Length: 113
Length: 109
Image (cartoon, rainbow over all chains, first blue to last red; front, side, top):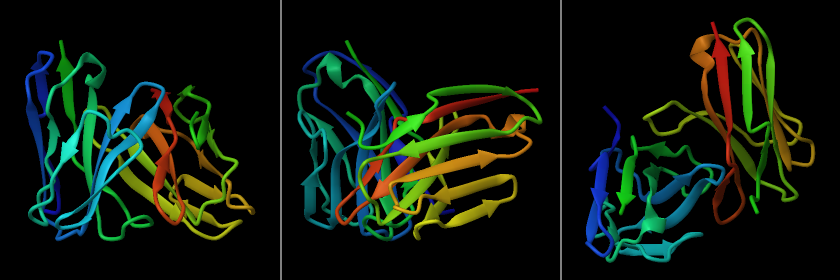
């Protein structure tokens, strides 16, 4: 089954404790992206990757890092989480960078205390 | 400020009624996508419209792309409880896909 898998689905952490949210897709998509979803603000892009070893900032990259060492994986790293990073995070992949259908994971709800 | 403005923000209707959701922008898009998101899940693509003035129908859902490719609408005929969800529009230009904040639709049985 074609899917995007994120882990963990739920996480409560404290300010400053580094964490990684993993994302894996099995569709051989070159394009992958991370979004955060906040009430009233919709989906805002954090980082995206056009291909292996190619990443770029989205609209709200501050406080986040990503890496793309393999085509299927695109982890999101919060080096020193802060309460304003409490949000619902989605990883997505696409065959085409901009106009293609985005396949989303089920989301990771992060709470930073 | 959202690049794409969706209205209304919330919509609650009775089963069998019709509804329309709007997606407006001052920017021109090469294409526009509509997604539906159910609680606890990621958004799922419903349709992509590409040509100005284009109308696409998926069963009871009708999607329209404005002539100037700046706006779009989603019309649901005879809504059912299964249509409940968050409807998101997303506009594509040369470089990125930008999402609206979404319209939460609740269809009461």
